Length: 440
Image (cartoon, rainbow, N blue to C red; front, side, top):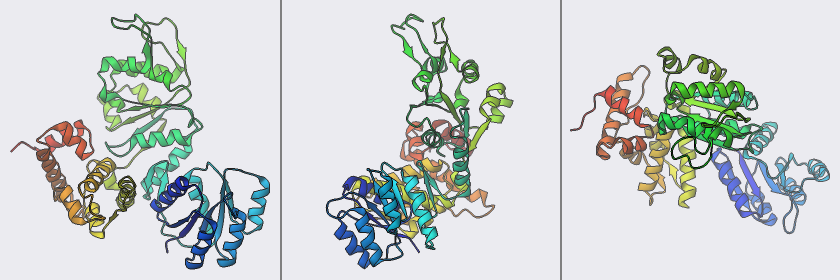
């Protein structure tokens, strides 16, 4: 049974935001702007839980709880208010309300309270997936990632995130930041692969005026910009060994010296780094400093590829389509055939590829309210082969055909094709070589 939730709030923006967020979590949601409307809905629908604004024109939230309990004695009423008071909280519980939350309250907190309310009332619910600071899924792999984030979020030590391109390493880094006590401070990101090696150290640590030809003013480095917050260093495997040495020193001492300066500076910046390669192999081949590896590898999060957590594919697909529906202003749903096609594909570009594929399908089929299997098959270039246990060859053949069709579509432009696939250029070039792909 899918849990039925009633939202009563006269703030239209908040009401719609909450309605969308709960819908993406698998609940069936109704909403009302006025108390009378909510009470009428309760006579027609057996709601399991109600989220009720305390202060509204006419009846207040406590009055509404009283009325709803008359109609549906088992309903769990949760008061939401921007005006917290112990007296109101006590009254809420006395009147049979389940809980009392103060605005602003984050979605994870609301979701937790609803889950507890439903569990305590014995309601079974189909809402089994998680949305943790934007990390969506229900697989054990994703649950493990979230447990690790909760464990390390407030430890002021570096974190290493490992995973293939497109698995969501920056999303995990942002979740660490948002869940931590640093959440109100800056989150600064840099991608080592996007900069020439000689520019990277300057970006990280800055320089003083006159440090080199063209340095006409002081430049503040990213480690300073992220003071008291988090600096996310993506694709750290592309950082050259000299910059690695400077980064290691900063991690160990908390100090650095901008280029051209005789004075050391100290900042409190947490380093979160990510790599899409086998970092142990990089260390063995002397492309990554062993001492920096050991310093980063204290807290490590491995993100499994999408093909290893296939139970997340449908959850993510429905979540993305709900977001695109919101942008379009019209509801869009996925047919069973579409879900089947998505489940039978290997996703070499992982979550990023799934996101871009569904975005492309929604854009190209703006007049459709249902995404069908044919839409998905067309977008994949008919590369949908069922992944059977041990059936490695068909899966690789599926991936090969899809990559080749996308290369042809983009006239063999590596940058455009990689973007469409949701992978980086290096990964695409490796796949082209692996499959021996050539222009016709």
